[in-house]
Length: 167
Image (cartoon, rainbow, N blue to C red; front, side, top):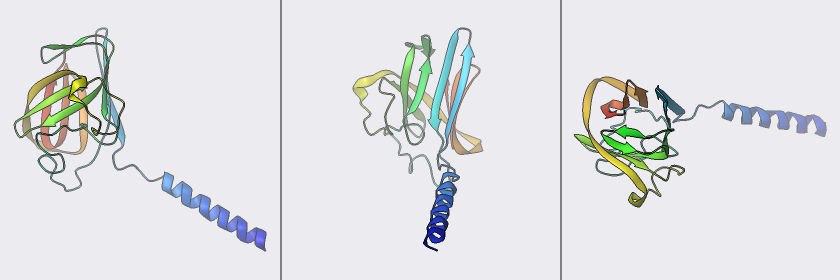
């Protein structure tokens, strides 16, 4: 009888473990890639949801460094030098940070790409910073999204969009 009780308890416990593993993460991993000639660009990020919250100016404060997504810092990787808004970014792997503002964002490529959030962000490790305008758009993006397409990096969440020229 003890053996049966033990086995039942064991299998119920295993079932609970598997049920927890089926749970989808709140901010799933996502990525985008673009090839332009011999240039390969890839961005890896975690994609949080709006969930009825006010995003920019509240959840993501204005004028403060943001990890540009959730969880680990967003990673931007290029195999050759790239012009970003007319400024050269050397080939490499970068933490993609931003400073959202009401009308403009600062886009930051930082040499410290392997970190959780922006808690250890250091401006001293910035390789490149550019400013771009932000726009309110009619389309609603429930999930934070980064798209690489047609020579641009598009950052979209809620009703906000930022476009960064890449060439």
